[in-house]
Structure formats: C-alpha cells, structure tokens
Figure 1: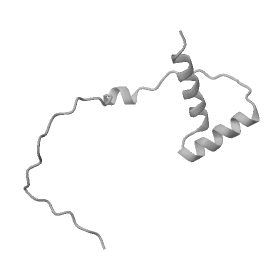
Figure 2: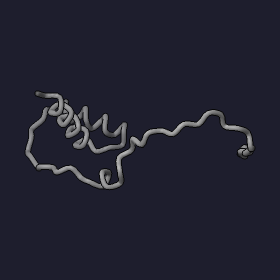
Figure 3: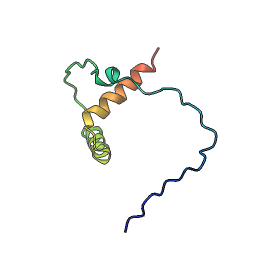
Figure 4: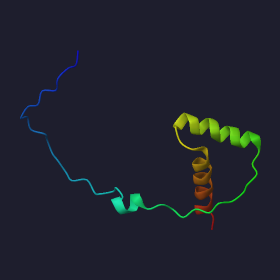
Length: 76
C-alpha cells in the first residue's frame, strides 16, 4: 500500500536562493571533438575497464577516454 503525501500550509523556514551551477542546454548538447586512434592495450587493462564499465552501465572506451583526458588536464 502506498502512503500518500499530505501537503500542509506549514511555514518552510528560512529560504535562500541557490547559485545556478548547472551547465546550459547548449553546453550539454556540445560533443567534444574526438580523433580515432589505434592503440594496443594489455588484456588485463581492457578486462578491467570492461568489468568496471559494466558495473556502471557505460562504454569502456568512454572510461578510458575520460581517464586519459583527466591525466592530460593535470599535466603542465
């Protein structure tokens, strides 16, 4: 049996606006430019990324790409 929510006119307390931190729809729609490369990886590495990707329901290639992007972003 579902419990129904009962709304009341009780005061909500002190309310304050939250700064807009979400990206705009235009920013969400943009795709990053990608370049196709051929890369040989160890079976162990590929198996690891496939296992982790399956856990998180995402493509393993995307996980590898994000890892490389993060590494490159933190280099001088």
